[in-house]
Length: 616
Image (tube, rainbow, N blue to C red; front, side):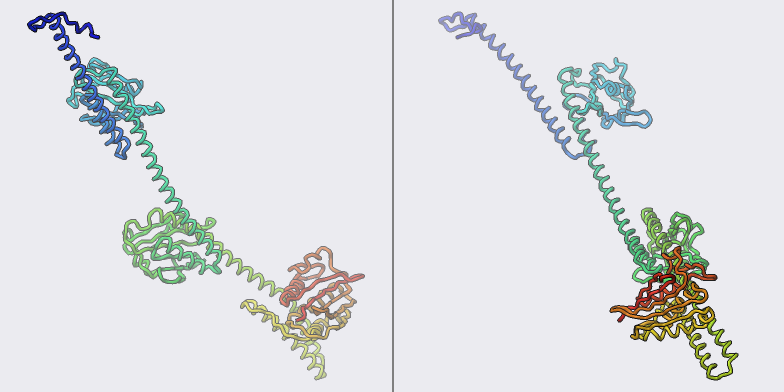
């Protein structure tokens, strides 16, 4: 089938082309020319698409790289100028200005320097405010255009296309402004669509950069937090070690030595010392590298210590401020130092001394702020430990003196009986002419004096920390007989009969002087309770495990108000001039013998004290 466009009318015998043939030839030429033009346009569009793809590939590659954001935007700016067939491209980013608030700052502005615009100012500012693109064919006829930039740069702006950069959340990131289309004006279809695609790529790049920067900052923050946490853990470990060593130290010097050794390790110092205010003097404890702790007493503070050392602020000294610091520290501390850090020891508002750290280094960073803070922290933990130790030692001294006072009171209490007996026997000796009786009285006086001597030596033994119990295995009736000699005169004066029933004839280990005191105390208490005309029964017996001494009286019995605290110190009832120490001394002596004592009421009235000694 042949188209109407190709109709042939006739051909002559000579071979000439008739009119129909001529029309066909003319049509072919037109067809070829039209197709050639269409092919050229298609080729140009294909080349243009290839160029765009290459440019977008370059943009995508640089966006996904870890290049600097300015380098990324510079490449995007160059490719935008190329793709848009323009003379110049400017990229503005949104920034926060403390004076004007949100504004645009030209990160990339070719040959124009930095351009800063407020929202609503100029073409780019208007686009930022409205978030709508502007395509202006003649900028000098537009009231939004500011020609001052042209005057400064010498550039002639003809037309421009400006478009907002927004992320997927529709948040404004910036503005792209393309200037001067090379061959005409920017088209509403192709150029606007092209620039919109480029803005999407810029938004991706800025978002990625934001996330990357945020991630880097988070990593830095995490690393810094990890470092601070490790530092805090190290500090806690050191402070825990200080507390543990303070708790385990038996005295103040050993505790301070351990603490100073820790300070040397923590600060890598050459010297660590603590001086403690001890009344009118100062005690200086010092530790140096590879040496033990030394202690000296100072009548006055070292000259290098400033007047404000008692404040709660650390004082840092160096050879740069005090040129004679090495000489001063060597004179006092026995060690020349070029840098010193003094941290006061304050507990309950009272200054007890100071922590001194010293170094021989000459570097400017000696004792940095972090070390000063750590020294304050150390001092804050050391001060309570020293204060507690000082209070404990003071309380121990007071307790020691209190116990000595108690012992003196009990000794004076127990000495009254032998002194009274000595006085009585001396009077009898003076009135007695019979030499044999005088000798017998003298023997009794001698035993009383020996008892007094033993009692006085007891307090000296206690003060020296020696055991005051001397256990010798003897029959129990011996100490009973010696004790009754001491109370016989008083019993006769009161008309009180003392009877002994000794059913135990064996021997047990005991301290004769002390058990004698026990018996005398219990008998004297019984006589005080009876008053006049009564009876006291002393009995000894045994069971399978114990030897038992029982002292029973027919007095009125134990008052109910002191029944539960009978053996406590200073408990007394109804005794004129009584100290309340007799039974507490008895309890103490019985405890020293690992024996036991108890009391029980006697029917119809009276009291019995029962002492049980363990048979060995």
